[in-house]
Image (cartoon, rainbow, N blue to C red):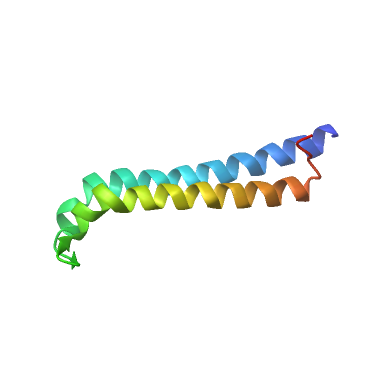
Length: 85
């Protein structure tokens, strides 16, 4: 892979990582810790939303982020013709 193409690949790779890590931080730290009191004013299924995010919602978000990462990286690999073998 030529140098400019390699730099563009890693630049987009890091962009994807930073976006997904930002979402991870907002969901885990923001919703689970910082905004828990405001979210606890809302109830879903009898549970306070802040509690739900701290216990269940962040786990669901993490699993979804893993699948999104795999999808985006496979698309990026095809775009730059990067083979794993």
